[in-house]
Image (cartoon, rainbow, N blue to C red; front, side):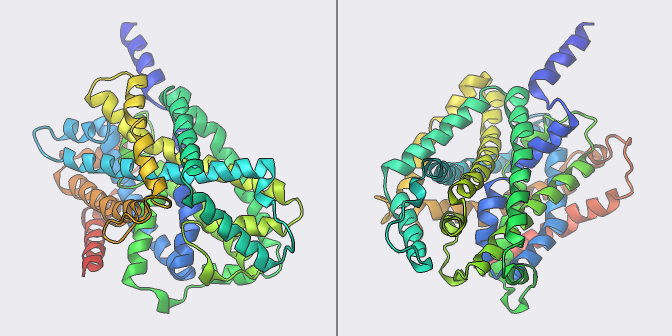
Length: 464
């Protein structure tokens, strides 16, 4: 009886409660600003269809195998990103791979809360109506200049972006203090269906616009002349971002999986839905861009959705309501992203330093008040401060995306393919032999040989 009570206690506090909760929570960690904010910007800057093609290839041959490798380590190790390696391979240095993942996730969190703050600010301005306080002639050129200038004025100011970022940090603390089931799982079960519903509404609208076919052609028809090593590296980095690879998120979240969870089907489902969200965003953004005759060459990467979408809404009937819905969509994505990223460091502090949930949350989140401020101010009063020619925000984005995430993913697949305790990967992928293992030889081959070679090859190519 006491053992049963202990098991129930562990399940209620440290594991996801339902199968749907596993899917929604893991999907929430993957589907966030990486898919909704970052993916359209990367596609626009890297040739549209050419980028999409390389991205899909990266998801198929790298994304799913790396996801399986991470979830296997997490569920087998039953701890945080560092503790799982220590539990599986004590007296070795493989825990360093997990620590790099924690570092990457924390640096990403520092600038992610800034972007999430932009989202909150734009939602608030949409609700109050001040986002569309355009005076005088409302020609397309007038609106384009208005929203470009508005965005630049906002992000280059110091106080407003900082305040918005701090609000996001506060919302994260409010959810994360409640733990796995009552915080993360409950939030994911509520917000993820809302996110998909809003995506479908915008996608249906975008596809009914005149000229939508041109946007779809740009997005789906690859121009092979635009496929370069730089585009391939960016597609690889976006794969890591969209699927939350190399950040320690999946190791941490899978430690909360029940032992009955089918890792293959879960990884395939999450990868497929995350890719679907990214594609739906492309099917929203690019038909709208072409329908309203916007110049792709003048659109800004990181601020694409904050300039293009309000400009479009201003030309639509019911612009305020469309804008409110869109920025609710972005805010949902922002919260699922930042909360899952923060959980990596919180779980580490909680388990490695034996701190309770509230203390661990505050230890992790409060320093972000300083780090996020530095990222936010890099658009304003700290704009002249450069690291290798990049602002603080752009440096952290580039360093984590193009270097830390691939390096962490490389360490993960090398470990699980070559150095993990014998049989660990097979045991986790097949649920200790209770799930069909017909695909395991292919999966093992991809993780052991293909994924390491491709990641290493792209990293070396980017250096050369």
